[in-house]
Amino acid sequence: MTAYQDDYHYLTSKTNVVELAAPGGARVLVAPAWQGRVMTSTMGKTGMSFGWVNRPLIDAGQDSPVFNNYGGEDRFWLGPEGGQFSLWFKKGDPFDMAHWFTPPGFNRGRFDITSQGKKSVAFATAFRVTNTSGTEFACAVKRVISVLESSRTADCLGVVKPESVQMVAFESHNTLCNAGESAWTADGGLLSIWILGQFKPLPNGRVVVPFLPGDDAKLGPRATTDYFGPLDADRCRLTDSHLFFRCDGVYRSKIGISAPRARRTLGSFDPDAGVLTVVQFNLPEGAARLPYVNSLWRIQDKPFAGDVVNSYNDGPEKPGAAALGGFYELESSSPAATLPAGGTATHIHRTFHFTGPSAELNEIAVRTLGVGLDEIQAT
Image 1 (cartoon, helix red, strand yellow):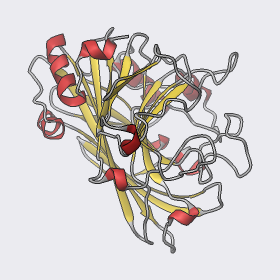
Image 2 (image 1 turned 90 degrees about the vertical axis):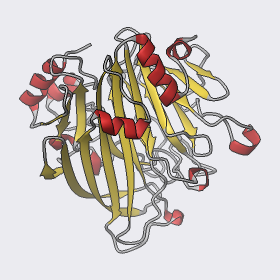
Image 3 (image 1 turned 180 degrees about the horizontal axis):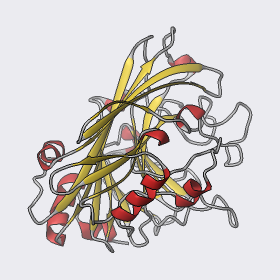
Image 4 (image 1 turned 45 degrees about the horizontal axis):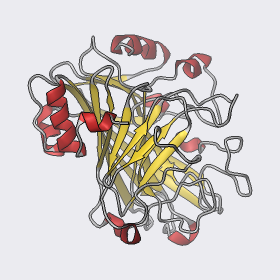
């Protein structure tokens, strides 16, 4: 795994960065010019670097109207991606990679720093987006990145970090404002805050997503696993309460958990480096009754019955095609933002990395994700 110092020196040679610090040596590296995204983090300045950084694209120095895929552990996007209210396809275009593009408002341009300290940095930006149905949204966005100390981690996860375990943790606090003069309503489509973290692929690792068990007739399917085609048991395994997903960065695939099934955590385990990653987000009370945008790449029968949690594994769209870069993602989304003029919606997304003795990591995994390390790795 890349050392943090290598990524730090590389990124500081390419763009201005903000480095946030926590006691014990944890560092979080943020790039204002690249939409205020968290590029990477580490438990100590001489330790591992956890974010996936797309050096070939950065080295090319070219602005892409399709996707400036710089990488990074936490980036701000808006949904939905697919469907009749999509932000990512033009009206009448097929839902395929040849016609997919990232809306310019969060594909290029810096997020302006509004305040900065040793442990946090705040950004603001404004842009307009138009969906496939022709509805235009005037958006104002505020984004605050903060490094989290052990006491805050205990408050969030309900887990006291043992002395033998090292950790780095941070959160993004994302607020979307309807800056236009008209209310945002379901008739014209709605937006959601969509936070995506890109991580280095894990040849032997797995993503784990807990979900609410129960009758499919009442809660719907346990998961959506066919975003880009069906997955075999080696790539995706479902139990009554958990989904396990291969994240090796070589096979294009995606999974999702809907609002009636969603819990507020997901994560991954890298058995080679001995790193447990946990992502937590704010899941509103009564989420099962709230609208969530549907991002499946097709016209939707239920455009507001989408996923809360997603994980993406990169790979070629078809044999012989190029992949986006080779990474995996842990993602969370807010409810669809039904907002009056001037109204706001907020979504918080937290990322925690732990390493240490297996027994201690196992206990953290059980407490946060509901399963131990052996179960995550079972095939």
